Image (cartoon, rainbow, N blue to C red; front, side):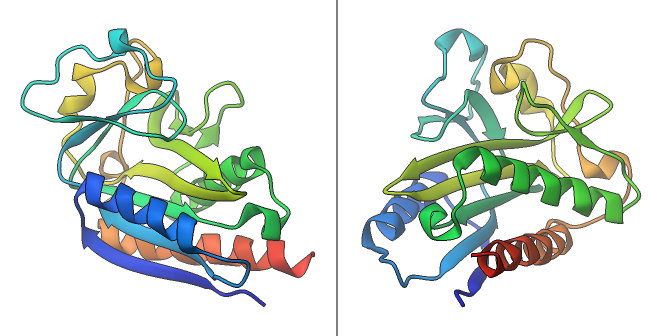
Length: 207
């Protein structure tokens, strides 16, 4: 059985981490265990492959990096849990849409453990609380393997989201776990990692 390796990486530069993900995908083989990287980024806007310039309103002093994940523009910063899912989807017999649904379900389950009710939307991937977005998802699949992942707002300054149309939606409200309960990024990361590991093990067991 393939084990899922969960790495708590602390605060990491976005460009450096993105480069490491690409190297990981290029160098992995059929026996390479899947990994989840849990981390935070210094302030940065990232623009996905479908990104449109009109959704970037005012960068200010925060850099913008055009990346190879799906989706539009979003913001990363301290107090946000980023989870990168480096999965061999062929080995898991899982499509990209199923992975998105799995990640959404894991976030919803983690929020439920804090007594917070959330939902996903078929037309707009991510997790929402009463219409406000608490978690964004953007993936890339190459050679049958996924990278990039989720950005889960825990305890952060949400102001930079006002400088963009988050995920390409004008006037989309963003929220965070701090608005409901007190929790740390590390604590939520541990819960998310455990929840995802259980789903990953279940996917392997049905093969």
